[in-house]
Image (tube, rainbow, N blue to C red; front, side, top):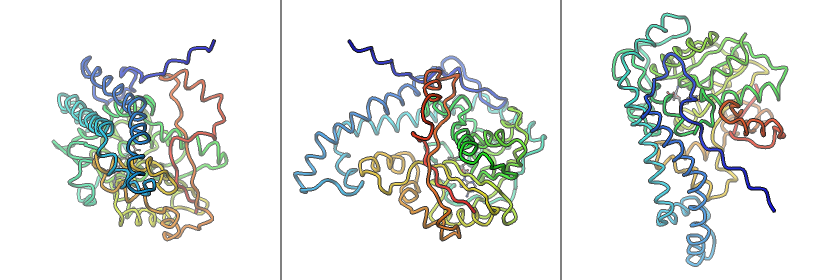
Length: 399
Ligand SMILES: C[S@@+](CC[C@H](N)C(=O)[O-])C[C@H]1O[C@@H](n2cnc3c(N)ncnc32)[C@H](O)[C@@H]1O
């Protein structure tokens, strides 16, 4: 007799989400709504998506074969084919709906306490570490797009000193990740810090730059891993920086300076950083901007320094069906640069920017499981060969 397979571990309850001074408070029914969304998202990816693949393998692919005498060669062909499939239509519509629901659920939580949140962030701004530029002109690609359905986008300001957009981002991200990024949604930064300590134990960066830092979810783990480093967290959006700074103050992290600026033209001297990171940032820029960001990264990196870009994997050498599924965000989740970015040859981009081709590398970093949320998974992770599975694609280059 076989032992019963262990029951799959669902998302933890919303109540485990990490608290800090600007994290919006949630009432019972608001938390219940996020729990529903987290479970729905898990159902969509773990249960429903395999059915979409079965519809592709069993119906759509044979149909394409009989019409063309070959399998699809490009994800565009897969999209055309699958747009007729009811399983894909249902999955796609539900995924979009959960994204919209997350944003509207977060917004209603934030709006009823916005005055308090804005006042708390404003009071924290008296502490060192926040550098806003009232004359700053944000890049055009950030205006007019509600990236991943965020109402008003990153730049949205409903009142003076507003933090509504990042508060919504922070309070609702659990619904999308199901807690997979940990209590403080900082799994990306934790993974990078862990990778650096494991792969480069001798590396002790004195200055660290996080481009497109957002509200600092993934900046703080690096600041904590290298407490003697001076960390610059740069972003174009003042609301993200106000909130990120207040959050860092509340969490007791003091070696980060949140600076408003454009990652395409950073106001820092040549060769002044030992570590430059971006996390889920490049895909939100543009074709011209990404080249400038690589150029700036090369200019700013000190000899021996490391740059790391954390993203979803590039499309090169990826099966066309997987490309099609990953490209969903470009068509349905307001990510206008997603497709182009994932098609780009980052090695070419880096060498054009002046990096030595021999010092360019690709690797993966794996989420550090938050043991308090997922004790079984954390215990399993400890026993595994750490290098084997990677959750995030990393494109890196050394100066
Ligand atoms: C998806 S968020 C990622 C935030 C953060 N890195 C994280 O891991 O949570 C992308 C961020 O990039 C910022 N951004 C986009 N273009 C920028 C630019 N040219 N310069 C600075 N920040 C930019 C946006 O304002 C937004 O906060």
